[in-house]
Length: 213
Image (cartoon, rainbow, N blue to C red; front, top):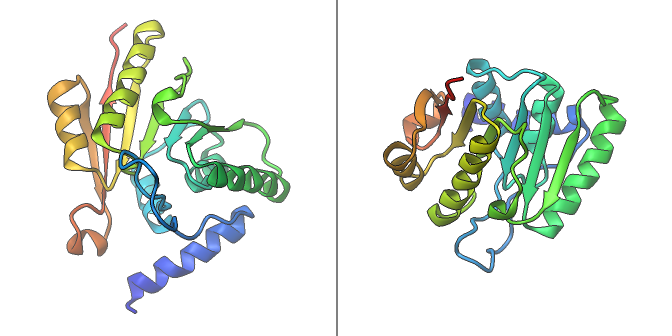
């Protein structure tokens, strides 16, 4: 195990303990539908790198599609004080996210901004007029992604606001769709040191859609 891999492992333990949560482990088995991919939490080392180059504010409202046990939600809430929303179709993971929420609030005492979790399909989530940042760790097929993006675009038509999408480990299908069939524009690419050298998918892509007022 080299230095990068050692730091990766240490951070997995450090942040869960800091936040008073349990978010490690991948999904055992597969989802019944091939449209929904297996759960795997975004590594804490990757989240560190993302937010070294990309900032949120307490006025942002971030939606994580396929949030699993809520790792991203708690990380953002702790560091930025932003409102966070987790969408999870798996009832077991949803319940673990709720348990993590209780232990997180007990540990950190941070109650300034809300934390919401919903157990539903991504394409069935009713996009809130204040949702302005959306996170995807390749959680489902391009068909579901397109439906979800369409819901976001319909929301923008009703309530104009600037939107940004954060894609981790982005699929080529996602990229092609955004760049050829929508008005989203690539704002920033953030690659992960060491890991990107061995796997070009180890990166974040930030897409933006600005609404002229």
